Length: 127
Image (cartoon, rainbow, N blue to C red; front, side, top):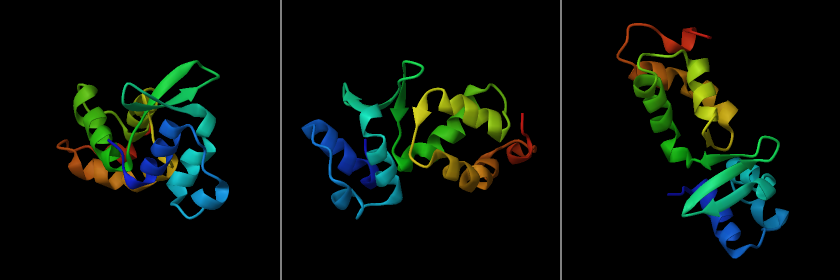
């Protein structure tokens, strides 16, 4: 599954033709960020991956539309209890990547804590 930001890059990767900066500069900042990572992105078995060459590790590239869902699952379900926001994001970054992840982190704090059924505020927990 891809979103608009990722779609142009995925099409180019499948064709093995990197778009020029002139072509990509008309796209969103997120698409530009993926373009800058061209050498680190692959499509394998229908899934997009970012390769961390320094660690020989593959991370699933997540469309922006699905990032909130991943945060909620990691925060509410996979931890067996509520992790603080910082620890939740650390766990997510072990397996997933999306453009402008740091910016999304700040914007999503209130979204994640409002979806929490716990009385504690995960955005106030730092570790």
